[in-house]
Image 1 (cartoon, one colour):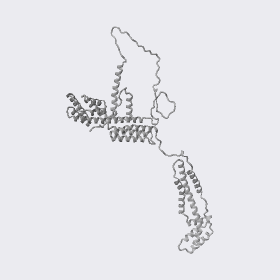
Image 2: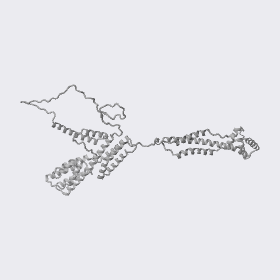
Image 3: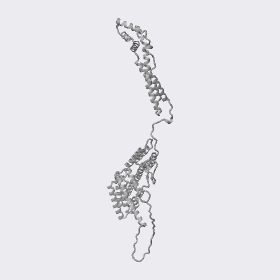
Image 4: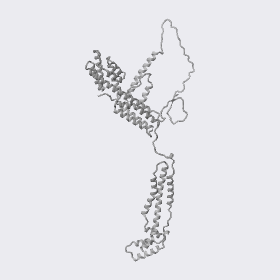
Length: 501
């Protein structure tokens, strides 16, 4: 009896399981196809897609859905419920299953089971659970076809879009190459002077310049790197106080001119020709001085040595003191040792002075690079006497040269005549309005005023925290008003003194 009951329910249960698997696979295929459509769209947009991942998505998701449906399965209870509902058996099939599960069925139970068995004998599984294709399967097939089309559709190579940094801007690369080329001289000087800090500075500056050549560096980033290079140079310049040492060495040169034997070296020191002065100092031996010259030279050298000591130039002060003692008739070796020490210190200062000159030039060159027209924008390219009537994207990049308008035409005709007279007897007066002597005097006064205010501006630049761009503007102004034959290059001092104890 039990076998006949379950045998009647088994075909229905199998059909129900088949329908469940078909619905699960359809939904799994829908989900996988949606993922495939997304991957196909991304592929057409140029993003790389793994074929293995796409295949796993289209096949794996439906397969997983099948496994989940199989694990869920269909029970005999569901088959019995379907039969009762279809044939309106008033739960006879479900009740029979419950009675079969009892350990000790009664006569009443047996009668109910026999009645259910009679009804189940006429059950057709195809009527209870007909196999029909789910609607979701049609949607799944459409999505699958769309996904496959997008995944295999040929993509033109020129239409692929790949994320990549912008190529280097040629004008920025050109400025970086100029900076690297300028730094070669400073690099050679650092190696010859055996200055590790200067070598490190050059290395850092070259690295910053090379970074400007990298793809993706825009105008703002290039200006920031130039500012970093300038900051490193300014920090390095703090090691060189050439202005102070220049003044002391020139004073030493003036003192050495008190004796004819040391006049050549003194003159070179006073003229700022420190390399030549070092050679002259190396040639000096104990000079044959008379008492007056020796006393004068000794007094002046001691005075200069004291000044050097007061400003912190301990090594130079000691050498000058030793030279003064040798000049008054002391040991010959002491005078020679002092001149050799001064020669070494002077040569060392000449190297520092050259380094600072190069650093100053590099600082100004970087200022000019920052003002350069990297992208043909925000730069005044010259004066134009006409007004532009065409549209442009580089607004503010030009200035009109004719800002005051045309000159006013005079209505009168002027005539210049030279009148000469015949002087006679009696008093006469003469006034010269223009003469070569007057122009020379005016030129000398102009040069003196220029040198005076140029020095004042340099002192302010050394002591005041003025931005680098404004410093360049001030120097450019004095360069423009520099008189013919005037010296526009002056050194800037810094707080650290080389050669001090």
